[in-house]
Length: 183
Image (cartoon, rainbow, N blue to C red; front, side):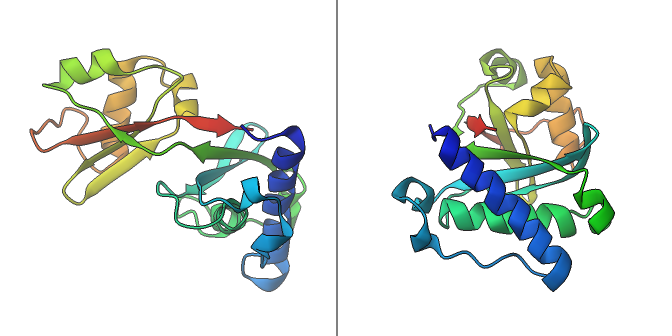
């Protein structure tokens, strides 16, 4: 768990990266060594942008492959300017923007016999899920449980997000779960 000051620093980095992107067209450069060790660790994050409680962008990584401060800066920029569901963020929208950062735990495989078994293992409002089968892949952060509170509904929508039909089932389907520290 990060301190309130470390969380504030990450939110500031995210906001600065978006502001820098509006002027320069790229994420703000980050000097990792300028930050405390806890913010230099490799972590996977998602940055979610909202305006008036409506989604405006969400981009992240599932695998910890770069320092936390850099991951937040890059994902904030990408959420603002490269989320394919939205046009590029404008300066006017920037003034109304609310940022949420989710730091992911390492995803762990879920073992299950069938869909029913999988559904009984899901922990609403706790689990984020990664679902994949071949080239199809999708994830939902634990926060998605707020809008899809029933496990069956959550799983059906996640399949659709991954590009599969809501009724899809296969013995090759893989599921991983993770938790987040969200602020």
